Image (cartoon, rainbow, N blue to C red):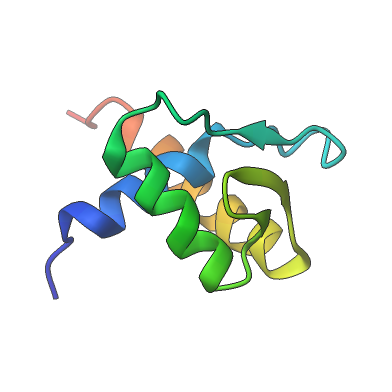
Length: 81
């Protein structure tokens, strides 16, 4: 399975959420890149965020964002010699 541009855009949105404060949401403005707007809509359709243009993470969204952010952290680690 390869990562589609749509899936990558969704992961990028999930990576923006502050997991240290779940009361802090996001707003994807109408002037944002069309890919980001569409990704937010898909995340809302999947019931991972509360609003079509961002909002807050749902319970399932918190889990998804934790996994997405953990994966990014692992991939950013320097390569072992």
